[in-house]
Image 1 (cartoon, one colour):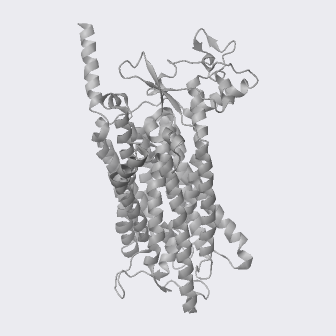
Image 2: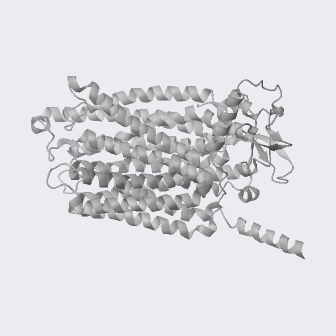
Image 3: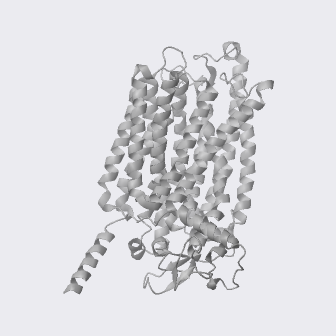
Length: 601
């Protein structure tokens, strides 16, 4: 009877698990993401206008403040990933991040509503007013650290659990995850599009109180919706701090740096029971790259008591050694996304200032003017169209030539995005040269001293559409491919960390944008500044050409890194008898390993 009761309890538990995960959990996760991205884009898309026109900061200072904020917001996911993978789990890390984000949004609402927190007249904001702004931005950055690395990985977890893999074959699961990544970025883009049209218009024409207040309400709604889906989620247990394990491998390898490696890799230390929690989908196999770290798995006297590990700082399993190797192998390709973020950073600063100087009437002589920050809708729309056509048109077409179920793999997708982004920056340089020529032709107030707030170059703002649209297409390829690569090639216990790496690239790219702007301003100060408050007197087109050259070099660097990349080898657990037999396979050959043979063409 007791055994029957246990069996009945196990069956009930299995039935409960089969009701969790999959696309049934997606509405709650994606609605949460829509509200979150709506809130984020709602206050950040037009923040350059708030800093220059409400707090009266100079253009370069406001631009650097904005890029530094974006950099900090993209750096915090490293802390969020550490918490999620170590002890909190992804679900509760998302909740905690959302609460901090809500507090930051409330601070921005107060700074926009209270007269004491805004400068009077045309005076520059004082220390207190800047401090309140920075504290609010820091809270939103901290909140981003809990949300960004976990939401995308948490959504993918709904398809990457044992019950889901039992119901579907591996190829079906891989296809569902690919569609999920596309759907994730599509909903994110839809939310941004909504914010750029509705919220930016309210900020420009109604007031900043409502302009910040509506995103704050949306953030609160995202928390409520996400909590409502709690019973449907697959919530994977954290496997302990991945950074601690990486440090243990490095320390053990250094300690045994003089120890000879065995000729047979099977002599290296294995402990399936110890690695069970961090290898539920299969253990990583030994590779012949980065063999220095293999020394961490050499068994020496005193390392074990019987078959059990004594001190992880002296001895690591092969699986843990390969976790570190996987991360190290990913870094060169990951780093190619840094300069991509640098190139895109000017879309929220200099491009908006360009739009502000141009004729923004939708129709000639019409009354309605498109807000400068709303020009980003063309980038978002292009990204949404790209994502929509990707699965419907590009994948079936590419499948005929490559034979891959995914059409092209994520290496090719990311490479295509990097190449397209070069065209986007080059288009920006060409349009800026034309805009500046229009300003020079009309002269007068357009060139004399600081730019008057009502000075307009008689050139339609829609000349900026190509550069925004090309950037959007590039985003549809590069960002999704970048995220999919990181998720697929990271060890399964470090999926949040992999998502954090995506945002860390954005962070470093934003900081590099600040460094580049500062360096250019310093280098050109004596011979006609490229970057000035009056951009008609500057040479913003030359700055864009500089970024274009850097992007060409970055693409070449990516191609070299791709050529030498090795896919992680994974020993997959057989579904028929998960505890007894194993089969050898490469991880996701249909979407990744074929890239090693097929290349980027």
